Length: 240
Image (tube, rainbow, N blue to C red; front, top):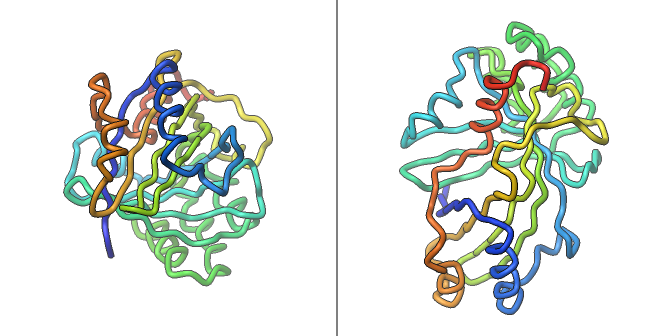
């Protein structure tokens, strides 16, 4: 198991325009997306004690969370992911999961105590990760709690396995049963005009990329889309 560096920054429209113009000269756009990027929608899981939320807010050195993710509302390609963090570095395990399985997992999500019954559908899947999710839904009542949706524009570079993403217009909703609907009503998690820049790499970040990112106006932040999605729900209410 290997871990990657993942640095995050809050970024604004003028900064995005400048960085895009520079990065396009030295990096490739993600081949899986269009020139305008792509839409990401994720449903996050937590247990009956909200452990993932508490560990994120507490900045625990070792923590993990499960999520199910789709791209551009394409129901034919859905991934289950477990994202782990250890001493500031990140690791991600991934497995394909079927739409019908996800529908069963989220349809009775209003009660945490439905988790073991909903988890039974995971036995139809054959990956190690789905089996791990099944165990967690039965042992600690892991269950879906929030949706996070945003537009992503990504750039890649083989040297250092670098991936730079602009995650824009980030919204959240607690209506996880609407995961497969075309449009969902969500609430912005950041102030107007604010977005997120993520810089991910393995052993090193090439100097020519580091110099572009190091504009002098960006500051690293311990940003969590999941944590903000839960806090928004707590502030505004269950109707999200």
